Length: 452
Image (cartoon, rainbow, N blue to C red):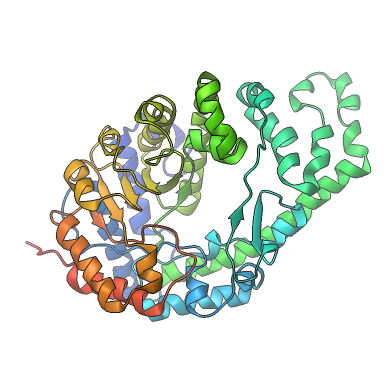
């Protein structure tokens, strides 16, 4: 399941032993040729700083600082969102310039921006992106829709992969619509059936869909090779990546990705048992996705954006019965594999803090958006590391002095004893150089712990 240790040995390790192995790999950066001894020392210090903050075992040397954003970096240099998605050389050079100018603890990666050509080739209908449905200066916009009908619940629960291939993808990508015509691959179990099974693949429509996948794959490969080279360069210069894996709360997969908000909120009242069964079916898939991505990146932190569980989206009873059980199962599954979940608690999570206390001490961290940080520290301070919640409005309209004052209040309130990471409360699409500089520089200067 993992490349960190032989299969038989890995299966015998405890969760704590697995995490220790992952931390050791993260710190050692196998295969990296650092440009200097100073770069290697800087890399290890940055990684250890984040580990110390997360595990709550001791205070780090200072408060770590994350620069979390999508189109933030290009916006700081006047590069349009469209250019960020279509001009690889421009976006790579812009991110490199950002690291040179701002010297962040953990380098942001263009991987979160993506390649617009892939969306074009596949005919993506689920998003509008720069220059396609929105202006070239705008970021992504999600197109709400019932990409899974009520009648599809059983198909999802019975066979998620088949549902994704023959139902979901044809609805989301125009170029892949012909895939709804192909048969189930599980029907191919005797040689005589092979002849009839492959007939749809001989049609021009299905072949066109396969050609679109191949073309999109070629574009994505070209893009990821350049992004990967940039990430490797940053690591060799001593800048660590802060996130390795990505997955999602199972309820959000159902309510965001498949049903859409309106339909999901109806389902909460009319068919909660079916939603719960679908979320439970997704649990092992969500765990595998997070672990596999973390393995590939060599960074054990797995990012989970949380949406429908925020304050105001559902009652406490609905959160307790429909949202939290499957999310908790994913979190514990990731922790069992030695990974560190990063819960991006978008919106407010003031009424959900007690649930987060159910996680093992020092096993994860929560990046808060609009949650009261003083309360979060009081409730979670002895259990989980907390991060955030520098407001987007302050980044966009505030002054450097106001930013420093806000960061000082956060450090004074939340940082004592360790377990705090400075970060924006949301993933920024835009920013001002003076306020971004102020957050990073002030945290470095003021957020120092007294070392004994």
